[in-house]
Image 1: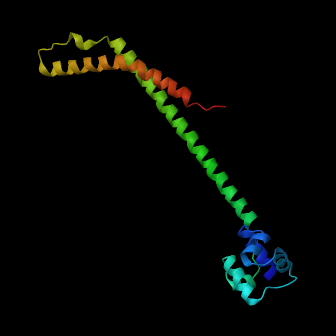
Image 2: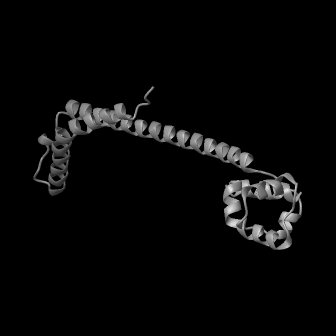
Length: 169
């Protein structure tokens, strides 16, 4: 049991037999004999081993320590795989949402342009002697003037955004 625990804890700490031997001021063959169960360390050496391996003497002498490094790596890789899948799904949802917003922006821009063209600026025939009508007419004229100049830029930007966010195969 001691031999198995020394070996398992040494490997879990990422130490070779040679590295452990250097830290304990013994030869590598001594470590090999301990791990094979051919000899056992004395009580002082057992304390030194526990200090170097950062574990208690009772753990070294107690129950068998199971090497969990392979299982840990497998569990970590499975968790990373799940996280990667979740991130890919979030990215796909975000891409679809952005494309939907850009398509909506294109549709709204085209609808407003068609509406402005078909209405042919009806506010120009209004009576501007009434202050409320004058303010409303100026507001419509300002909106139309700004929209007609910005709409092509918005439309081109939205179409470019749709192509840039499409899924690459």
